[in-house]
Image (tube, rainbow, N blue to C red):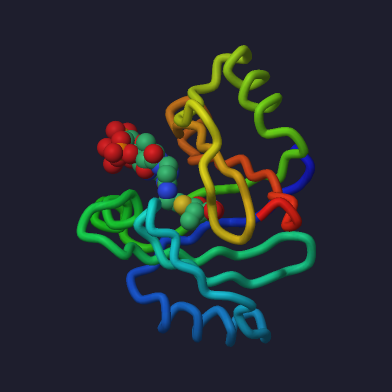
Length: 137
Ligand SMILES: CC[C@H](C(=O)O)C(=O)SCCNC(=O)CCNC(=O)[C@H](O)C(C)(C)COP(=O)(O)OP(=O)(O)OC[C@H]1O[C@@H](n2cnc3c(N)ncnc32)[C@H](O)[C@@H]1OP(=O)(O)O
Ligand SMILES: [Co+2]
């Protein structure tokens, strides 16, 4: 794990929350991106080496909608940057963590991502992210 790549925050109203975080952080969001497969629309802020990722559900189902129904808005996941997501998946599986994805999937902001089930990580949803080489996109 190289660094905390982002903190994912589940929000009900992306526009309102983006305005709130722009005030809080004193800087604008650098991108808004919808990721259909994850049924979310995201808004990103760079804070030093780490980012804040705001996530609003774009579907009547989806993990963010379910999370908010159950726990209201708030911190949803911690994402770590890794250099080799396949090697990390293997290492973590062998170490007994529950990797939710057989293969990495496309995330937001030019990344491959996988998740670890919170029941294997002390109740914290963990995401692994590997930058996608933009020349390959
Ligand atoms: C656009 C991509 C972006 C990126 O960074 O690139 C993203 O970050 S996408 C983020 C949204 N996608 C995901 O979260 C995918 C991974 N999540 C899942 O697969 C599910 O949400 C899962 C498996 C964590 C939970 O799904 P399930 O249907 O089982 O929901 P339950 O409500 O029944 O939860 C079961 C159990 O887990 C606890 N839980 C659920 N979500 C979280 C969470 N975010 N943090 C901690 N714990 C969580 C929930 O409370 C239940 O525990 P229990 O003790 O039974 O109450
Ligand atoms: Co994320």
